[in-house]
Amino acid sequence: MKLYLNIAILLLTSFLLSGCLYPQEKRVENQIPYEDQIKSVQTAVDQYRELNDGLIPIKTRENDTPIYIKYPIEFSKLAPRFLAAPPGNAYESGGVFQYVLIDVETNPTVKVFDLRIAEKIREVKLRIKTQGYPPFKEAISNNIYSLDYKRLGYKSEPYIISPFTKNNLPLVINIDGEVFVDYISDLYLTLKETGKTYKQGEDITSVLTEHSLFVPAYSLSYTVDKNNEPIYMEK
Image 1 (tube, rainbow, N blue to C red):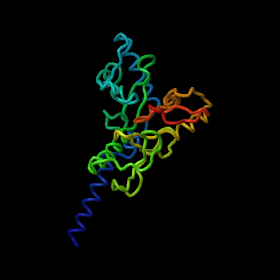
Image 2 (cartoon, rainbow, N blue to C red):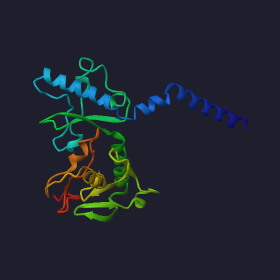
Image 3 (cartoon, rainbow, N blue to C red):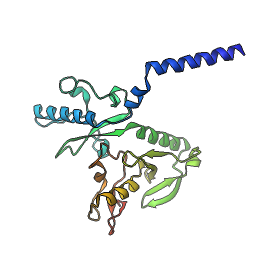
Image 4 (cartoon, one colour):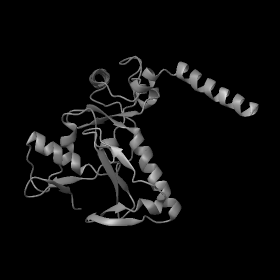
């Protein structure tokens, strides 16, 4: 009995010490993107480009990397000359956000995405690999399927909290075994709210970035039907 009590005391002490060493405010701060932080990085990127003939401070990625995660910012090129240090919520500072650039050819713009999305996708892909094959459930569209998560050992269906609407977004898979976040419900709401119209066959995914600090990381491609409602882009 005494042994169990000592263990409990040690665990409680450890918990209290961790709370002192890592204040809750600090941890929460590293999980929230602040507009002023993104603006400061944007200013640093702009200054870097001015002094480097328009070059952008990014890490090298493969050409086939999905567009919204293709251009992560290389903070070592910005700090300390253009920026004192990476923001506290950046991955490089122990935060959960990857800072990226979009529109790199015309107007390099700083955005972020939550790296916990990548962690969740890796977890699902690992379970699929362990099973040996993806347990397709239903065809959502041509080449896009939902997954039978019970066969992957999940008690409940995993999801991603949307950075745009805070709604729960499902993960889907294509015939090649690539796992994506399905942003179609976010797109539906965004098109209704903004009233924007698109041509059929035109990729509409970028509309999510226009009034947000975020990018739709690990997204499929989407277009609209004849009623200007979002559908999956057929390849």
